Image (cartoon, rainbow, N blue to C red; front, top):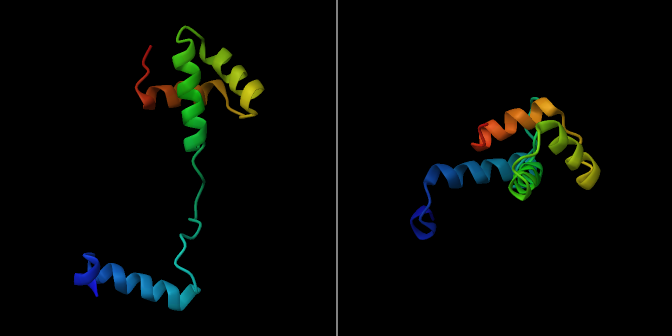
Length: 88
């Protein structure tokens, strides 16, 4: 089967085991604290910064709260912009 699908035998075995135990192959929720920024939030942040790159982190946070309903702190804006490569 793995040769037909061109995927490793261990992957097939893992999928079969998961189906037998859970009755589904869907990705299950992970344990632990979730990330603060979702991919959607990161896209909105990047779009806001590209629109007007001279905004302060505080004004970006307020803009995202009013326009998108995204609750984000100024510290998170600083951190996420740094991770995205916007240094300033």
